[in-house]
Image (cartoon, rainbow, N blue to C red; front, top):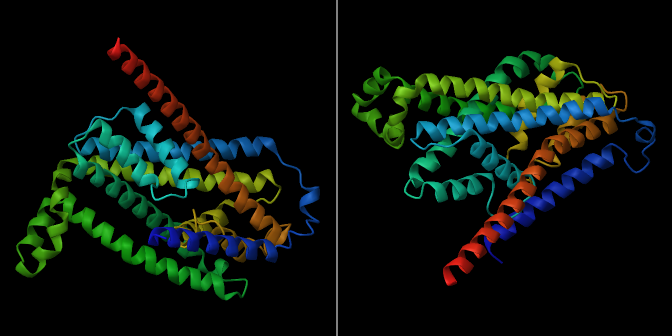
Length: 333
């Protein structure tokens, strides 16, 4: 069996084990509280709307970098490809993930721009990382006392892990963007022979120097997009009558997202639920059950747009196949 299959099985096993552990801690077998829970559909629809806005922001952010790299991508096409990517991100277990599907479809439109396509995806990730780091600094770290108030070791460990992940990667990303966007800094670094090697991997990105303001705008869009994703979880908590104060939601989500992004499970499933139990289980009316319910519902309302993207992709393939067949018949006649 290929190595990637073993890794996939390992991630599935880890996700299943962690999800089972979260459900066990929440005592879902008895479901005494959930049976009496009423779903508030107004809040649920609002959660789905915010999930859609998060996907829309992702599409706008990526489109900005595609255009900076000299490729004309329409707004509709960017949304279409982003929703395809969202489907692969949430539901597809094969080797072709969200980045792969974007690269494949964009390469069909711009076959001679493989490097620029890869750069647009890498820059999209970089700005997303910076947005998460900014929100972590603004909302998570100032509430450290509350996060560690339940006398559990897990929040403290999670904070240290997030400090390391976002601290190292965020600092490297910020340094790279700063060097690229400011010619004076770039020239100063390259005037030092011992520093010149550090900037060598960044040279293919120098064409972004005139687009500094566009990068700033993409960063703002990225922050708003991530906040929309947080709002989807916040609305989900109200939908199941487990309201989480906005500042508490803003405190936990940057840390939860950073740790759930570590590729030990599929889409962070299992990791996210256990973190919700640790961070919120002692504050909600239904306790650990409420924390797991909010986490799973928030994941579902954001993932629904990936399902829509999958249906759109299926219709696209059917239409493309029909058009190819019609063209073949026409050529034969």
